[in-house]
Length: 441
Image (cartoon, rainbow, N blue to C red; front, side, top):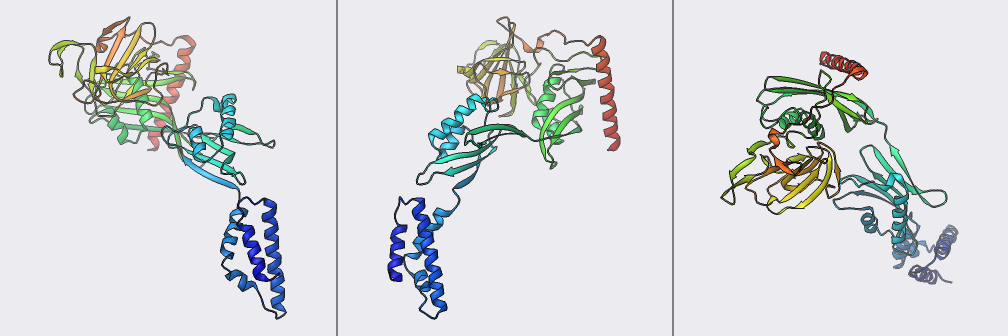
């Protein structure tokens, strides 16, 4: 067979769309053999057909076809999670078959690590897929899903070709941070100025929210001090904040020191006398706001006539976080007519609270959701009948709406006996630690 005929035969072989692996292999062997024979002929002084082969019009397409079929069948994908994403959607975007997706979903229902996980917006999912020969669909080989800043769920095939899941936890190093500042405008801005993380600010506002009305009590030049935990990985990269160990405020000529007491799973904050500051409800569920309308009769700013104002209004910047003033269950999270976007929380058989005119709800806030005291439930807006961004806040006691600013709640727990002795040890150790940190500065 002449060299041109051989080229044409190989070219026709390469154009067959449904070619099998064996055919591709034989074609490769044939081409390599031909090259070897041709090289030997050239060495003997005979006409070398290699240049003719390389310059032939069909050679580039044959070369491209072969390279496309001998490259790795595995694809590595790095995917940034977007709002509204689900594993189902992400896998479909990457041409994973529904049968493979169903296997993953079945595994999710059975595996405790995957059962209740939520995708974190902005987190990076790493996926390894294997392409099926002659098909456009992919097979899952491995998926790594971050469920927190230091925990990743890894799903991959085992020796029996079955998907298995395991939790990988990055070991964290705890460091203690002490920050302090003087308040010029409001606590939130003063805390941001010393680079405090927003979730620590919210927790700080929560524990002081039982003792201080941030809208009326704070004066210019009041100051604060916070001792809290920060966690880093092995590369000294910040991962997350821990809990507040100690918090101090000098407010309107009052000095309040609060100490964390208890284990990491169950703890409270106590003053120097061993009395808990935590009560059923916080005085105010928002920080950095001003009281714009009190409880009682007033001329309605939109309707124009006098009527009972059954809540307290706090004017604040659009998007300011709103906290649950107490732990409980959400029994309403929807549009409430004149109240705009609103949430109602049932705290116990006695207390309920309402938060209205929200710009939006925090992620996951819906009917039946259990929330903790101080947890962010939404953001200040001006929805419904509203003249500007503010929070309308109501407290309901035994079915009756009352003035939240005059609400008197039962005193917190008072430590006694051995608990009080243990608390004193913790308090003294904390004071010594603060003194040591300040001495190093």
